[in-house]
Length: 275
Image (cartoon, rainbow, N blue to C red; front, side, top):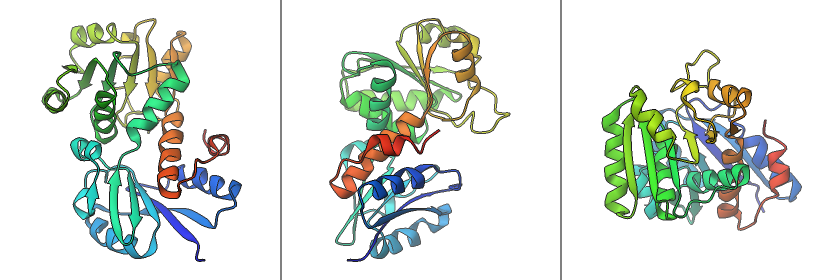
């Protein structure tokens, strides 16, 4: 029996924590499998997908390819298709089947960190890139009642709100520009949890997406980045409930692992590899 190879692709990819997390799970379960990181540029997606059919058992996709990979897949499930974002590909008999575990990962991380549940609740997203889109459609499908989307470009947030409410008419969706202080502060006061979904904070000198002092007491802040961003540092200093993105990374990865192998991985073993 040949070793099964799984991968994560992105540009850049060297920073990915996924290989350590998945390989620890494979070792713990004594599975003959390996998970590798592969640097793929946008113009290399088609050739990568062709090679994956022959050589891989499954793969993950991270930024900036969650949308770009879609044309090279044989099928995509409804939630991922609506969001235009795929982060997990299953390979069966040379067929590539795409889905997203990002929304599930964020839901599980919020539940774990804050005891937060989606049904009939409210949430706020800062940014509306691939992970935010995937999570927004997942949240809507789980019965979220009110969603606020704050984005640098207002038209992008308004477009996402329009897409969401077309498919989920029970959802109340409100968009606001990040530089509109009054609208942003008002939105932040309407929700129990704010989720920072931009890439700001990956680099030490990145500015925060909004002034940290706009965060009200009583809100819970989840930052999808797992470094100590300006928002996380402010939350910690001011007694605001907060969590970084390692929980989302853990749970979306564990769901991918289960989809590929049919086995629930040991979460504690995977978590030990994360910051």
